[in-house]
Image (cartoon, rainbow, N blue to C red; front, side, top):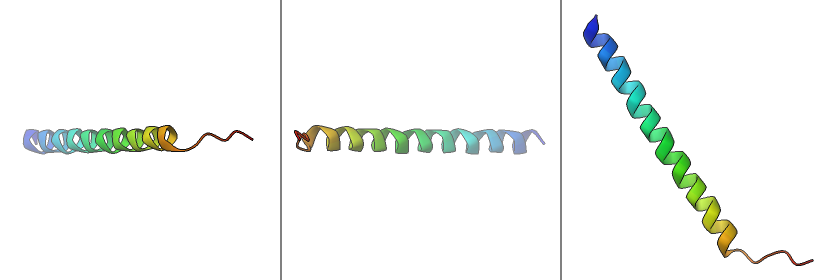
Length: 42
């Protein structure tokens, strides 16, 4: 029983880390896109 709980906690922890990395990469990509596109001066 304890092993199953530890396994579940480990899986949830890894999933949280992966989700954070994906979000950070997306935020970084959006920042670069904003910084490298020409401003709309209309």
